[in-house]
Structures are given as C-alpha cells and as structure tokens.
Length: 474
Image (tube, rainbow, N blue to C red; front, top):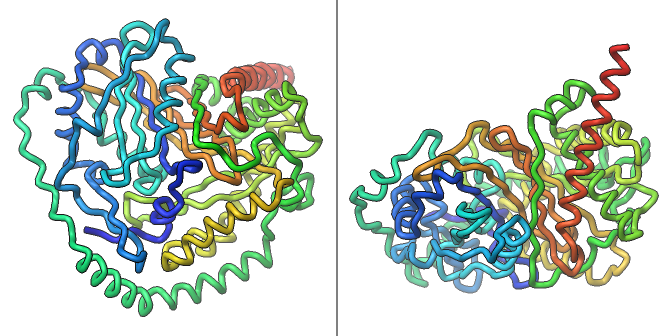
C-alpha cells in the first residue's frame, strides 16, 4: 500500500462524467502478431507481464471523509476477464470505423471499484489486423511513465506466442484490502508527518513562486508583448465539455520531420508545434473562426527528477501562443520556435515553483478546491477563450513486439480539460510521428477534418523546407 501524491490524487478527485481523467494508448498490431491473436492468449500475455507493471495491479482506495489522499493497493481480486475485452470493428474496418470504436470506448468512465485501466482488443482493422487500446487513469502515469509502461508491456525483441501461451502462470496474490480504520489511522499518521516534513518545503516553494511571478507573469508571448490568457481571442474549443469523446489520428514520417529540421535549423518539437498550428489554422478557417491573433495553447512539460518515483505524474503546463494567424509555413515555424524557446526559459525560471509542486503536498481540500475553482471560473466566464493542449513525447525508437510479431504503430492521447477542449498528443514511434487527436464532439464535431489538416499542414511545411533549402544552396 502506498500513498498518492496530491498531484496524482487530483486526477481521482476531478473524475466526473463530463471530465473523465483517462488517457488512451493505441497499439496497431502487425499482420504477423494479429495472425496468432486470441483473447485468451492476450489475457495470459498480460498476466505474464503483471510483475513488471505495478500500475496495472493497483486499485485506488479513498480515505473515509477524504482525511488524506487515496492509497494504491495491489488488488487481490484483479480480474483480467473484466479488464481485457474485445470488440469487432464494423466493416469496412478502415481508419474512420476504428476511430469511431475508440471514441465509444473513450466516452465511458473507468470503474473506480477496480484497477483504473481497461485493454480493448479491436478486431478487423484493415482486414485482419488487431488494435489494442489501453485506457488508463492519468493518475497512474504521465507521458514519460506511460512510455516505460508500454515498453514493459510490449517487448523490445520478438516474443514466442506459442511459448507465452503455454507457460504456467502462478496465481496473482495481491494484498488484503485495508479496513476503514486502517485507512483513517494511516491517513492521520501521514498527515502528521507531512506537517513536519513538507511545510518547510512549502515555504521554499512560496518564495520561489513569488520570485517567478515577478519575472514572468502568467501570459503567452506574441511579437515581444505578453498577452494575458484572459485576453486571448475566442476559439470553438471553449466551454464545458459533455460526456462523449471523439478520437482520431494522423501519421507523418519522422524521417521527413528530421529533414525539415536539417533544412530549416529547428527542432522536431518546433515542427510539431508548427504542424499543429497549421492544422488548427486550416480547421478554424473552414469554420470561419480564424482569429487575427495567435491561439492560446497549453504545453505540458516534464519536471521529473532522477530521484522521483517512476510511476505517477511529474509534469507542468505552460501557456504559449500557437501561431495559427501566420499563413506562410516557414514563418509559422520560426514563430513556433520562438514561443517554444520562451516556454522552455519560463520553465527553467519556475523550477520548483510550479502549481504541480504545491499539489504534491496540499491536503485534499486544497487539491479539490483548485479543480472546482477552475471549472467555476469557466462557467462564469462565457467569453473565456478556451484553448488547445499540444503535447510532444519521444516514444520508442525501435518497434516493440506483441506475441507473434511487431507492433506496427503506437498512438497516444491525453485527456480533455475544461480550459482546453482539444488535445493534440504527438508521440514518435519507430520512424513515425503520430498526432493523436482527442476532443469533445460538442466543441469539435468533425475531428476527422482536423486529422486531414494535420497531413496537409505537414506536407506544406515539408515542401516549403525543400524550397528554402534549394534557395540557400543557390
């Protein structure tokens, strides 16, 4: 049994039908892996991995009266028949049908009485392929931890499917669930310890926050001036989300992205931001909603230290100006590079002074109050501009393996928040750059069009980089 940090617990407290706190990891199995697939064999495969995958064994137990943050317990009744399930993709089984099935899965909350994950095996993609959709609570892992979890679930070298299916697996013991009295007693003990050990840290964080705010007010930068988050232009991505979710994705070549990086002297992350900006620009223009100023975006960034726990969350979020107002793809990339540089510098200035550092130590009432205040603020401000979350995570460089063959592709996406009705999560995988798109259909009713604009934006940038390189050579 182990205590959650306040930051991880925030995902448990904020769970509600309109704002589910789960993320998606979508693995497309190759024809070789799909050929040897069966649901029973997949359950045995997952069971064989459980010793290396603590988050898939954990059940969240809240303390009576929320005296302190919940605890993780190894579930003694872990039922893989419940957690690993199947669905058939309707014909013709293309990308549109796959994404509709994933959207339905994403629209259902996780069962809080069980470990907070589900693995859905979707059969019939592009003929005979299988797609494994891991839905899990954000409380279990951020992007860095999710990458580690997937690399432990899927092997780096080929797996013998027949050997894995025939292996004898011991019964999973779990641990006895603590009584209400034990939860209360341990909560009082841990809160007392926190008062002695963490209050001095909070004093240092308070000082660091004041220093950081003096040097860098909460705003995003455009042409040398700071634009308040509240004065950003409105977008269709604003407003409280509903209970349904939409998922789609677009895939581009990582090698071509590296060619753009070489031709234009930027980073892959800059290319991600510029491609996302171009795609959102195209989408907003198609809806006659393109503002003359940059679009407010939120960029998650890791603040994980070497001595931090592997699982759970150590990320923060910075606002930035996504240059959707710039038509020229090269100029848009230059602007994206500038705002990314500014966000990184701001991240360094705020080291140790992020809201997430407070959340690690705040008691439950403080942690819950922050989420409630944010939702109330959005409800009371109908002119709140909304925004988009754009996240970039380096994924596995080499192909991972399911039983019987390699994993062909891997797409990840985060969750939708009140302040950002569209989430774009970009993961690299084995030579691919995958843009996972996730939204509430109330705010983005045609997410598939945004996926098309991603491909168009990247292709436009690639061609412009080739022309720019040729011009420089002359």
